[in-house]
Image (cartoon, rainbow, N blue to C red):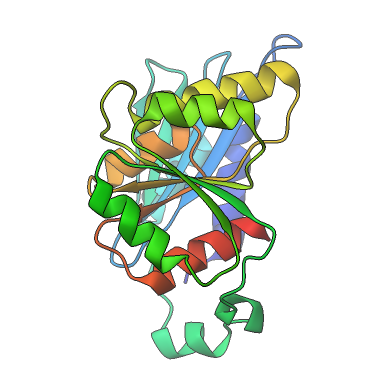
Amino acid sequence: MGDTDAVEQLVRGFLDAAPFTGPDSSVRLKFSARPEKPVVIEVVSSAGLTPDPAAVALVTGMGGTVTPTGGGTGVKISLPLEEAPLDTVEAEASPQEESNRLDGMRILIADDSATNRLVLEEMLADTGAALVSVQDGKEALDRWQAAKFDLLLLDISMPVMDGVTAIREIRAIEQKKGMTETPAVAVTANALVNQVADYLVAGFDTHLAKPFRRTDLMHAILTLRR
């Protein structure tokens, strides 16, 4: 909950500060919000970023902080916005969010723990989704290149290739070939605010903090599918 107009104004302020100096210049904007944690907004520009002083002042006025990242290529904005009442959130939940069906979806799971892979497979067993499980980021990258997937569930700490490296490789290939980005979820026990912000900047769309409930997993998948 908060002043949505102010949030939009500060985001526009930071985006306006992100220059496009050539045909290959790019800007990435990511939002993250989890219960009992501040809202995190990441702005990254391939051409470098000089924050607009007015936007910085607006963040400060809202009780937030602005932290430079990537040696001047981006900023991380943290806003301590109030959480909406739980009963309000539940009342506004759509029927689609309550659905357990994922018919036609192909989901790639990568985790070096056989137990964790089994847990995810059991949680998704009755959804109708087609599941492929691998044990490291390199296998995930290879399987993704060999076949089309609708969603990626990637652990972060894995041998051979970790989840962050894997998603960066995938995003680079997608950008080079002009492909639509495959929705990706970072599934990890390392879920501090700064860590989650790094996952989002790397290319993940959202994250699930271990341990999580089946409802959390389904909500993340259904949100990304829409």
